[in-house]
Length: 375
Picture (cartoon, helix red, strand yellow):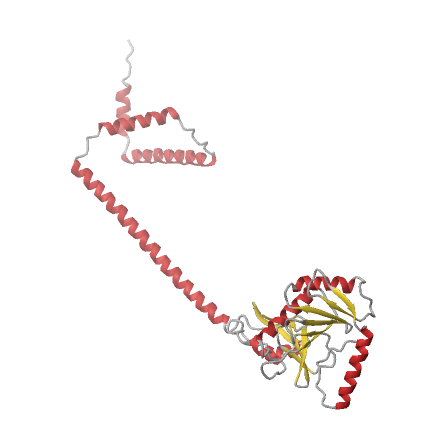
């Protein structure tokens, strides 16, 4: 009969028989092996990219259901506790809003201060370093050179455009430059001044006090006793005061100024040229002379534009020969009467009283001869 050994007792006896040193050594080896295994697994896990786990809708639904059940199982809050929590939440939100408002207010103050500082710096630079004049440009036609115009303006070319005031410059220039009708001074940033000028155009001339004066369209005296100026000569015009070059003129009778402007405007509108003279001595019997040989009786200024159109039709379309001396009665523009007057040139100068008897006899003889020719 064989005896079966008791393995449990054998193992137990062996364990008991192991010394403490051996047991400690064995435990340390087991610990090192387990640590190495963990490190190896962790290293493999880092080297191998883990695929993102797909969300499991069933698990998410189950978790949501568990959460809802848990909430239902919780005991209800007391009214006092719920009120305290709401009050604490409200205070926290209010504190957060106050912090945001304070921060926003601080930012606004900062931005305002920076903007004011930037404006101050820009203003100082604008009147010192920036926007200094580098070019002065003259535009428009005139009888003066650019240097003369710039000198009359008083600009030196080193002005600061921000500090420069253009008020009064055109008036000073017009006083010095008498053949200009208008002047404008414009600042073109960052460094240019532009001067625009308009040349005066002779409108009419008149004789007074033994001198001949030329007037521009704005009523300014351009020349006194010029050598050669092609414009309409007005007879019967008397100025209200002394006349100087560059000054503005007005008639002793204000109606004469308006009368001359109306007739000159009508002549320009009808594009009539070579108008030699205009006699305004009698405002109801205005007499205009064309080319020194056609005397035109306008009557009054009524229907002036219609009269000028009819006169232009007769003068420019061959109704009157280029060497013919005639008179036209244009008081009615719808029925202009033409009469031959004389083969002599029409006198357009103002009449001069003669005191000599011999001259008086000659004038009577001339009148008799002219009447005979007309007959």
